[in-house]
Length: 431
Ligand SMILES: C[S@@+](CC[C@H](N)C(=O)[O-])C[C@H]1O[C@@H](n2cnc3c(N)ncnc32)[C@H](O)[C@@H]1O
Ligand code: SF4
Image 1 (tube, rainbow, N blue to C red):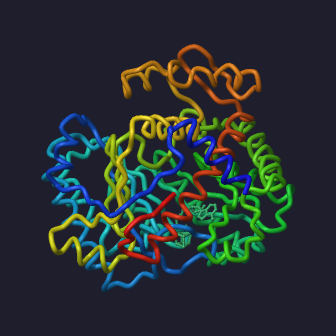
Image 2 (cartoon, rainbow, N blue to C red):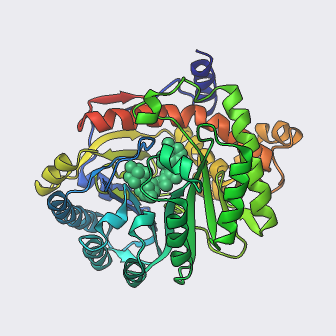
């Protein structure tokens, strides 16, 4: 397949390897303590793997909310925090993100407990960002979210036409979701983000335009507009016609994204990542923002310079393992220097901008000596706006370079998450 060939060529060029694998070699607590010796600050990601219903397109690790399991989950996460507290010490946590699943399923039974414990065991020095479901945003719940110190809230709106909400099997109407979003917007958060999916079956340009204007009118601070990705192991994926990377799909999405870009730019938003547009002057809502982080909970992933590892996805196995005072890590991969550099570049392209100085500080070598040869041709193609120290991707560059990245990410996520969702302790996953 052409995709596989492209993948191999790019992979070899950027990482000097033709492929990689995660396996079940588990780092010890002592090994992790050693890694933290020269880490000054870290991020924390907390995964809440529960939802009230399962959406057919969703690739994330989640299961139907059960209060008994959730209670045991809270106790297990507290224990996992304790283990990390011994490893991390007093290092400042400068980014904290709660994702899922649906964190707001545990708003009245667990989240606060976990946050209080986190604050008592780790040196939290930052605002909290959290995902939420529109149906969980009553006035009372919004007050509760605010009172827990969550300043940045994301809402999974997904669509603003009833027929598309139906296709996605979302449990609300357009009118209902607008009321939830308006309520959140009037609640004094630093940033309210809404997730929106485009490229839905039979979606017209006029519908995308209408939804884009409606989002601006609702007064949200940020829109994360994702194209519908079809992961083979989800309900939508199994109906797929194999068109994930079809050239026609990629061009169709570009046109749709351009409609949204025009609406958001003229409403005073700036692009803050491949898919996100943020009202000028508002700090952006985003996942963990610092390069090195630990992931808590089932399927939490951690990245510590030269290692990436992933907790088991299975909630029962996660709870059992943590209760044996063992870190619930299922898979890990040691990252060569070239792999670390390629990973760094991948995320900077996602964020659409970077400073060469950051590369120098991270890797002790000049950006140009490693990737400089790509800058001129990309500039000639109109993909880059900046030169010199600061590199900024143009809208065209952002889209096409990320489309190239997707050839990797969708495939890797499908293999890694797909396997991890069926096997709690895989021996090896070859990417
Ligand atoms: C964890 S969910 C958001 C919070 C909450 N669970 C909800 O559904 O409202 C994360 C977001 O990822 C996006 N997403 C999920 N599956 C997707 C897919 N297959 N393609 C594109 N975006 C997707 C959706 O916009 C979704 O809101
Ligand atoms: S989209 Fe949100 S509510 Fe739906 S299954 Fe995924 S995490 Fe759960």
